[in-house]
Amino acid sequence: MILASNVVASNSWLWYATRATGVIALILLTGSVVLGIIVQVRAASRRWPRLVTFGVHRNLSLLVLAFLALHILTAVLDSYAPVGWLSVIVPFASSYRPLWLGFGTVAFDLLIAVTITSLLRTRISARLWRLVHWAAYACWPSAVIHSLGTGSDAREPFVLGVTIACVAAVILAGGWRLVSGWPEHAVARVVAGVTAAVVVIVGLVWTLTGPLRPGWASRSGTPAVLLARVQAPASGSGTSAQASKLPTLPFSTNVSGTTSTASSNSGTSTVTLNGQGTDPVVFQVVIGGPAASGGGVQMSSSQVSFGPTSSPQQYTGQVSSLNGSSIQATVTNSAGSRITLSLDLSLSGTAMSGSLSASAS
Image (cartoon, rainbow, N blue to C red; front, side, top):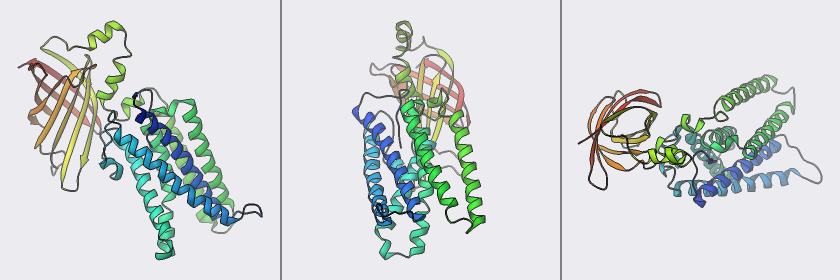
């Protein structure tokens, strides 16, 4: 679930709707998982029979899907962050925080599978239904990782409190499930308990050293263009004036940023490079074409944007030369002024660094 932030913010009501529906969907999903565990331990009382628990669990799961649909719809319709329809179904295909958004896609796909098999329970084998429903245990942690990694609201007290409460509720319910019926299947229960403890510890360490640390918006894969839109207005008047125009041509600057790759079933790939210079400039290079056998892409199309941090698309154009990680491009502004860009990059995973030279054509 995308929980947007004050690091990459939008004034659009869609952005705030995405934040709200994401938080609500996580709360409802947590409730559904807890009730599912209660159904498994066969907990019941005269005032709350097991049939009621089962019915509430089923209806709550459907409600999760409703809020999740709203969450996805508002995220895609909000043009501020590049969340496309493909990334709704295909994990890790987005150019916006691809890894962490991908966990949300995984959670959504698993939830869809669980819901469909529940609706068809009388028409499929009990073994298949049970096997798919075990996926619910992977759906919930994927959603939590997504909410922490994609949404930079994670450090906000309210959102952090909700996340802690959701995790605590599932841990308590899971502990109850493990001790209920002990010592039946003791070995399996111990293995499950140790595995869960390791996952919780690893998740806690990652949260403290990742999403809760300053600068996560940049490290998580947010395009430099989006970061620049927020950072430029926050500067003082002198800095803002400087960021509104390019340095005097020709100039060179060191750059850093992120890379992401999206592949399609047709065998084509799209590589997106988002970078920002030590001077107040940002750029984005999108290269598409057939996937290369050794990795990367054979360019058949390209799109380049370049400009000062306050106007990241002041110049647009195409790649004119591509040789490994050395790129040349020609970009033009609305007045017809043309600039030649030379990029000499070093790529390591999703990180990018190197230098950019710009000169008048």
